[in-house]
Length: 373
Ligand SMILES: Cc1cc2nc3c(=O)[nH]c(=O)nc-3n(C[C@H](O)[C@H](O)[C@H](O)COP(=O)(O)OP(=O)(O)OC[C@H]3O[C@@H](n4cnc5c(N)ncnc54)[C@H](O)[C@@H]3O)c2cc1C
Image (cartoon, rainbow, N blue to C red; front, side, top):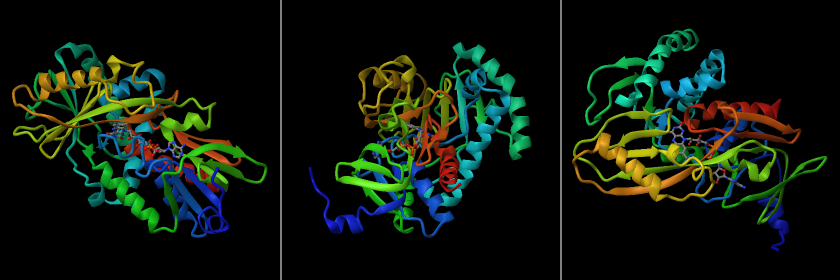
C-alpha cells in the first residue's frame, strides 16, 4: 500500500468541504455552480480516468428536448404535466449550459431536429401527430415556444422515410469542446481536479465522509456522486442501470444529411459532423447485451447501424467507417434524472439517460443546491 506523505496530505489531499466523484457534465457543472454560490468552499472533483470516461465526452452532441415518439413513450409512465415539466427542465438546462459555456465553445449549430418515420411506422406516426398540438400548446404556455411541426418538404439525402416531424429548436454541439471548456473553467475557479483517481469506496463517519482511492483516503464534509452509469458500484442500493450505446462515424461524403435526426423513440439517432455522418444507438435489437458498463463495440450493432445507413442515408456512395466507439448511459427506474440526498453527507446525481446534455446544467444546479441547503 502506498502511504501518504505529509506534503501530499497538506497540499494534495487536504480535507475538502465538497468532493465530487465523476467529472462528466454533471460533476463539472455541479462544481462550477457551487463555486458561483460560494467563493470560500474547498472543492475537489475526481475522475477515475485522465479524460472523463462515461458519456459526456462520447455522446452524439444533440441539444434536444425529446422526440415525439420518445415523449409518447414517456406518457405511458408519467402524467402529461410531468412530461411537460421534464421538457421544460431540459429547455431551462440547455439555456443554463449556453450561458455557462457559451455558444462558440459549444460549437453550437442551430440546425433544427427531425424525427423520421418509415412506411411501417404509420401507427406510431399517427399517435405522434395526435400529441403535437397538446404538447405544443402546453410548452407554449410554459416556455413561449412551439416544439414540433409537421414537415412535408424533402430533406437532402434522407431517403425512404414516409413522414417527418420537425423540432426547430434543436441543434448540434461538439461535446469534446464543451467538456474541454468546462475543465478549463474548473482550473480557473480554484477548484481542484484529479483525473485518474478512482473512488473505490465511500465510507460515512459521524463527522465526515471518507472517499477511499488508490492513492489514499480523502475526506470531505459532503460528497456529490456524479458517476452516472457507474453509480451502483459505490451506492449498491441505487436503482441506476448502466446501458451501452455504440456510435459509428463515416468518412467525409459528397452528399450528406444536415441536422439532428431521431428514429424510433430515440433508439436511433444520426447527424452530420461537417460532411460525415455520425449514427448511433440501435440497442433495441440487443437490449440484454447492451445493458452493461463495458465499452465494447459489437458486430451485431455495427451491422445494424450500417444497414440503416445503406437503407436511408448512403444508398450508393462508397464510404469507410473511420471512427467507432461506445459510451455508457445511466438509467434510473424513472425517466427523470435523480438528485437524491442519500444521507447528510452524500448527494447522488445520476440517471441522466440518453438526453443529458440539455438537462445536465439544471440537474447540476439542483445537486449544488442540495449540498448548500
Ligand atoms: C453514445 C451516447 C450518445 C449520447 N448522445 C446524447 C445526445 O446526443 N444528447 C444528449 O443530450 N445526451 C446524449 N447522451 C447522454 C449524455 O451524454 C449523458 O446523459 C450525460 O453526458 C451524462 O453526464 P454525467 O456527468 O452524468 O455522466 P458521465 O459523463 O458518464 O460522467 C461520469 C464520470 O464518472 C467517472 N467515474 C465513474 N466511476 C468513478 C469512480 N469510481 N471514481 C471516479 N470517477 C468515476 C467516469 O469516468 C465519468 O467521467 C449520450 C450518451 C451516450 C453514451
